Length: 325
Ligand code: TRP
Image (cartoon, rainbow, N blue to C red; front, top):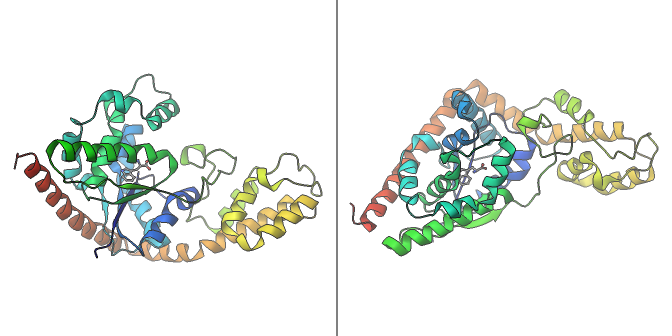
């Protein structure tokens, strides 16, 4: 039996941080064993929150893909760039006739994003963001989409669009399932959501020294003022990092923090060393790709060719069902 197909994308934001890793990339790597996987850079989507993102898209995509490969994404999978497959835009246009603006205005992710942008008004492309995402997913007839919780409403809209198209014109699309990432959001160094714009992140590619410097600035339990004060690991960002990157020592660290035996400086140094060790193989592989950028471009170009062929086949199915072909 043919393997089921997984598709997922990220907006290109350059080098990835450990929040991107825990929230998405690690999951993608895991799925590769079981599924036929497609991964892409959603560069058109990047324009919805910042029109000037266009100027950085190429470099940002390149750096992001290097992180994917260095973290363990298998280059045999199609890895490609959304804007290179024009069929996504074509399918988006057809889908835009099959959903009401009222439905899109109800999208909770939209409300959150518009609020974060402090925008007075909403651009047309923002409203249609999930329609483009549905086209990204359905053009490859993906069976499942691994995403974080914030993206689940978009997969729901995707399912609705698949159903609506199939009812209107005949069955072309599967209704893809949402695969929520297993690890909850990794907090940033200051406890807010880890993100580039919050300047509270650790990059996958940071050196051990950089990681140490950053972890040393992390916000811990505010009630643990002096070294020997008893701490509360459950409210400590560094403890969350230990849970993720240092699972073997977690119970000991909890005990020693709570008893006051372990001070924050020692705890942070240990944590930074564990994060650095965790990503040591990634840094090694990254060096290789940085020295061989042509390899990366070849992988992307091969991915584009594979993806385009499938996207074109789907568009043929679409027009045939619509009796427009
Ligand atoms: N909207 C997703 C995000 O911001 C990125 C994305 C675009 C995506 N198209 C997709 C994810 C299709 C999964 C499938 O994270």
